Image 1: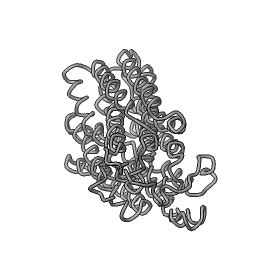
Image 2 (image 1 turned 135 degrees about the vertical axis):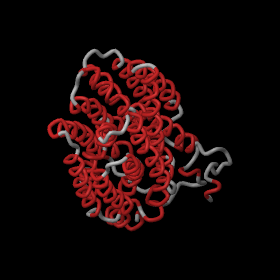
Image 3 (image 1 turned 120 degrees about the vertical axis):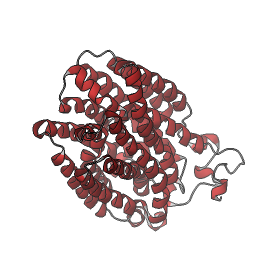
Image 4 (image 1 turned 90 degrees about the vertical axis):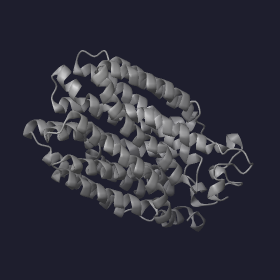
Length: 421
């Protein structure tokens, strides 16, 4: 089958894998749009409740921890029960959490509403949707994953600006209610389109006439077996180190920009520039990784993240922050898009959701501690210099973990036999 035929199955009908990609795109757009709209709420929440930057940052820290940590449970649940039920449940929980946050009278209630509700909701939506995409593609898996996860980038671009405008027109409480409605309607309807197995529709991955014979379709490991191997732990600790700094821009870019004398609107532009870069990274780096290999591209992304954090440290103007946002978003988008496909290179797709969820629990720890620590460091020193430089150093350390990983093809050949490589 040629690329031109990729939109159809071997039987001549539409290949349902692209419906899965579109559904996953929409799910990630609404879920992470709600999550990454947080910078627009940062100052209103801080002013409403008289909170410090560290305390306010903790709202996003709780949500980020939960939506990555819960992937360790929602992923296997999606493998077992199917992603449809898990994603629909998550959309309902996220919408209820946003509604509760809209009624808060103390910052702690925002922790419960936004932090817990959005965290649990996105945690139930993210990994099952991404895991479903992996089963519908083999040869074009990185491209399909990149397109689906582009939903995060579009959400990151659109949601902060939309939330900022809505807060200006309404207030932050009414804006949370609007977000709740969007998450509920689009999250549920898209979740109902998901399906775990191409075989149920009489199709094969990529819409091929027969099952693929590459390593992508070869023997798979479950989570327990994978945990007894070196590559998954190198990915795990590399992701942990990188993610401590990785989510800092999503919360602190806007206040950083305002500290430089820029307006709140310009700060939102900077945050949304991350979304522009994220879209580019998810769309461009998937095909690049298919040509040059997922492992070397991920290594380059980690090194690039370390370098761009140093650039952030040196930034003193709007154009520098916009440049940082686009480049950071490109690198971040590539990291998120390629992680599922990189793991599938080593462990197959039979337990993709569970393995991805386990690795994402490391990202959860970074999301939980990175932003609040940066906020409390700012509260103590009235400067973001130290947390930004720490973020750069941790990204460099994460690159060393990826560098130490064996070649996926050689590792599978040793593990499963020459036919797997």
